[in-house]
Structures are given as structure tokens and as C-alpha cells.
Length: 305
Length: 248
Image 1 (tube, helix red, strand yellow):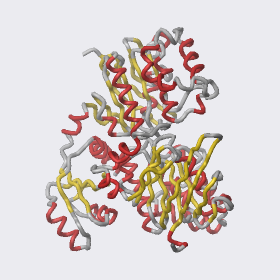
Image 2: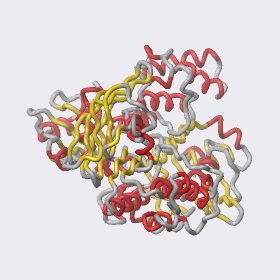
Image 3: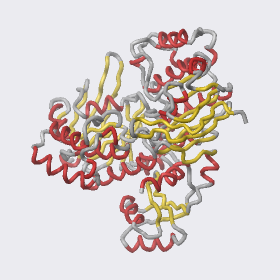
Image 4: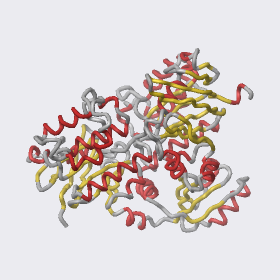
């Protein structure tokens, strides 16, 4: 174990709001670590603390062995940070943005170009286009290039793929895998649960605290719920009716089917019979395999109710 | 075709910016009460198409009607008959829940009495009656979404345009939002929605997939999955959108 990040009971308040509540975690060198949670869960605050941009109210954070408060100057050269909002200069061109960030860190674009080549290469067609005039996916690639140009040890990516289509998201994650192979530690947050499975470990966050940290497969294996798929000719009616059944703990949409969380006494044959009597057609209820979304829904269920 | 069956009907809709054709001769109809998913890769032309449908920009060529209004001649009239909500901008954080609702209702030309009656009903339905005076910036994201949807539909539009309404939202909250959509659709409202979460595409009655300015696929999720021999809309999207040239 060689943690590159250690958070020890980090708390951050904004007035009466506790944005991050006693969060402790470690991230190993070279790890692809995911932070999964909704808007307002405290992810971005945590990122700002790691990026030395915010001081925690309580607790300590060290990155590469340096304290994020005391050694912030040193640390900033070792971190590449891509904030949630597009933060490049909209009225500078693609090329100008890149050389601006390189000069801030005292490096030349040329010396580190090999690192960004697979990403920046796709922007080379329009070096003189203003950053503000790029499409969403292009902006994201430029922002990633600028975050990498000083060859950081750690890459902090705060929701890099929000608003990005499925095909481009896949390509983005392929690029991250390439960077990981070059030894860069990557902390990435997302609200897309399919992306969570591409991380080695994930922390699930909600309302400022961590619900669980583990590998995606362990989290799914530990789901431990009596889970079924359900379909009928009237999916919305089916949802309402299944929810009203006493031995159904939860029921929610899941793509083309519904997921039903049954109590121990749940019997799918009986439930189907009941639904058929009340007018549903083509009813099917059969065991389902859970995934990360089911885990998140389970972990936040108590807080919702 | 009966005039009332389609809330949106466009033919040969095209938008050019200089020599760039953002929307390239698209034609489609959206039926009353339908949940219509408008999918596409980034840069495919969705936003440009949606702006024309909402009366925010005129087509370079092509014809169409939205909520009975001509998109070439009645752009201002369209805005009164539709609702619009986006994840990026929809509510004022420094106004209370009630003030936000009132602001939008006033913009839509509702009278004080109408506003009073419908906001009372809405807050009860949304179970947010005790929160009316809370500032929007202080409420959780799920509530913001409910309120944003309420403000976009308070004037009972024939069709509501939802532009990535669930971007950046957790799985539980996203699902709750879709239940609002289902409910509104079951009450006869037409829903025109964009999303990058492809499980949400499964909840639509029909979806279109735009690629490089054109509509490359348009059918119900069942028909599309059968056509491409796959199990999920996620796979359909990846097949249809993978050859996009200008995407990203």
C-alpha cells in the first residue's frame, strides 16, 4: 500500500450547511478512483480541498505527502485539476490556451507533448479556433490537455463527462485508461453509473458523507437484495401497483424493465397472478442481477424516506 | 392527417450557419400526449433544432408547426404555448420557491388569481407547501427539478421541451423526475426530451437519433432494438451514432 492521497476526517461547512462531513479515505498511487454521488453530495468541495483551493474546517489532507494547506504552492505543480465548469479562456484560441497553461507551470508544450498527443491530436485541425466556439466534447479534450500539460502526478477530474454523449464518454474513458497506464493517479467523479465500473475503487457519496468505498464488483456482490425484473403492457401502472404491495420494499424504473426489491416473503408467481387479475397484460417477473445503480439506490434509500 | 393529432410537425427543417449545415432537412411528427426522446451525439444539431421548435430561431428552409403555430411566422406565439426546462438554467437561486413560480407564471401572462390558485395546487401536489418561502439555492437537487418542471408547465402548455433535465443527477432523483414526466404525459401533455442517459430513452414512446444534422433513426425503443438486434437503447445509440463525423 502506497497511498498518494490521505484524507483524515475532513469537514467543510458553508454557513450552516455541512458540505463535507468527516470524510476519511486513501487513494493508492496509480489508482483509478471514482467518486460517485449526485449534485450537492460534496464531491466538488472535496475536489477543491484536494486541489488546495479550499481549506477544510477540520481534519487534514495530504497529497503526495504534502499538506494541502501548508504546502499548497508545492502541491499545485503536482496536481492537474479539471473543474466541473469549463474553466478555460473562451476568447483565447485552442493553441493559446494550451501555451498559457504551459507557461503558468514553467514548462514548454513541446517537452510534454507526448502525454497529451492522443487527446490534443484531435484538436490540431483547428488550432486558431476560440475555445468558446468548440463543441462540448472538444472543450473537454482541450481542458484535459491543459490540465495535463505540466505532467502532473495526480489528475483531479470533477464530472468531466456530464452532458457528454455515450459514444464520446466511452472515448474519454479510453483516454483516461491510457493516462493511468503512464502511472498517473486519477480521481474522477461522475453521475453515470456505467462509468463507475471502469474505476478500480469507488467512493459513494451522499449529503457530505461517504456511504461506502470498495471495488465496483464487491459493491455489487454485497448488494444482498431480493431483486427482480418486472414488465407488463402498462409500465407506469405496474410501477404504482408493485409499490403498493406489502412485500415490495422498493420498485423503480430500470431501462426497459422495472426493478423490484422484494422482502423475504415476496413471491413472484403470486405477484404476477395479482397483477393479471387487476388487468395487466404480458406480465413477467423474473430474478434480476443488480448493478452499481441498484447499490446507490439501496444506500440512499433510508435517507430518502 | 387530422390537425390535432400532432403537436409538432416539421418538414425539411434546415438551418445553416454560413456554409455549415447544422440541421439538414429533417422531418418528423410528435403526437399529442407522446413522450418523444430527441437523442443525438454532441454537435449533432439537437440544440439548433430545438431552438427552431421553441421559436428562438428561424429555419433557413423548411416548414413546421408547434402547438398549432407556424415556426416561420409565429415564433412569438409558439413561446406562449410551450414550456421549456433545462438543467443548466431554469430557476433563480436567490428567489424563494414561491417567487420563482410566480415569476414564470407572470411571464406566461397568467393573472394573479390564476397564479394563486395554481401555485396552491402545485405546492400541495409536490408536497412542498412548507417550503414555499425557502430560497431555491437551499433546497436539494431533486426538489429543484420538481420545481423547475412545475414552473415550465404552470401555464399548462401543450408541449414541454426538456433539455437534458437530468444531467448530473443521481439515479434515485433521475427516476423520480421521470415519474413526473409519466404523470404529465398521462394527463395529456406532450413531452419532448433530450438526454444522454440511455436508460431514459427506454421510457420514451418514440425516440429519434440525430447524427451530423440528420435524423438517422426514428421509432419506438422496441422497434429500434429489434432492428439492430440488441437488448438496450444504449447499444442502439452506440451503433447509430458511432459513425458521426462531426460529433464530439
